[in-house]
Image (tube, rainbow, N blue to C red; front, side, top):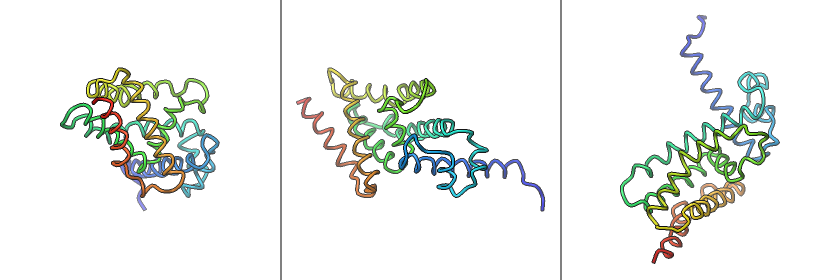
Length: 200
């Protein structure tokens, strides 16, 4: 049997990393910051040593999970950033895409919940850069859409209320295992009908 090629090794590494990340997100939803590498290994159906080979501790694992979630969130929201229509319509599209992504991808929900909680469960300033990137790539563009689209006197407050509503709706559905029952469009329509009524 011939040794594996560099490409084969890289494909195996990527598959293992995805397996570990998916398991870590599921364990985090169950245990929060109390998760341990051993829990992730069990959920991923991998040996403890295999997971430990990639991640020496849970904070390294969670940091990778959240950075990966940030990149996937930004990619999922791209149609709202580049779509047609006014800024309020883009903000509404952004909100629908974000809520749908939260339900489909637990790590995106974990990212939003962690940002909303201001990383209070994580020690030190380890996540300062991630928070800054989230602000620049996700939050501030959304605030800009609201500012230009609604004429809100406090677009940051409006953005925070929308983010809080989306995280809350996603949490209810995820923690009560009702992911397939969530009507993202209906929820966002209801939120934005309030914003639009304030404009009139």
